[in-house]
Amino acid sequence: STLRIPRAASMRASTTITNAAPSNARTQPSSSSLSSLAHIRVVVWDVDGTLADSASLGFDSTNAVLRDAGLAPITPAHYAIGTKFTTPRRLAWHATGDEDHACGRELGDAFDARYVALVSDETAGFYPGIKPLVERLAANGVRQGVLSNACGAYARAVIEANGVGALVSATLGADDVPRAKPAPDGLLQAFRAIGDDVDARTTAYIGDAPSDGAAARAAGCVSIGVNWGSHDLSSVDAFDVVFASVDELERAFFGE
Image (cartoon, rainbow, N blue to C red; front, side, top):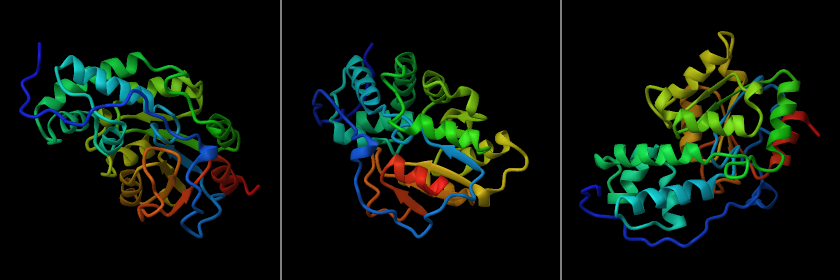
């Protein structure tokens, strides 16, 4: 059946969407004098645009759900803007322009079912250099978690598909926490799941969206932006520091 929605998104889609690999990321220098992360003992990662290059999967799944509902497809630019919302609110916004429209729940459920089923190391593979960095952090005793504004089943599927499930103490999605980012609830829940001794002052949240930086600051931890995802952070003051490449991020942790 077709959802009854007052106004479909009018922007038409092109056929592909790509994210630049980290080695070709926007090349502005780090945005802070916080050049060393050697004191960090816990890292929580965002998923899409931070760990995983999943933009095409998300874009294609979104347009498939919209078409199935009899709605107009969207453009890559419209998709990128919408990633600031949780999945139900994003789908409602794409469909009607109103992120709070009631259609978002049904569209979001359809999206999640498709999105999770299609996860693989090809459709949601880690950016080059990310898996070795996760492994190196773990080998050096840094505990790690994951917090996404996508559903928890998707976040866990991505972690398992990329072979780092054993290295991550907690993997949470928006449906696992009381309030999604930019609220701090998910990070605080992740800290508790990682260990009772987690100290926010030696904990970092790494993400590619302004809402990630806002959540980190609200949770009292170090906020780290990466500039290879969906958002250009060149002029964004949401993070303590922004890194342009995985190599630069790794050097900050290990001083090489």
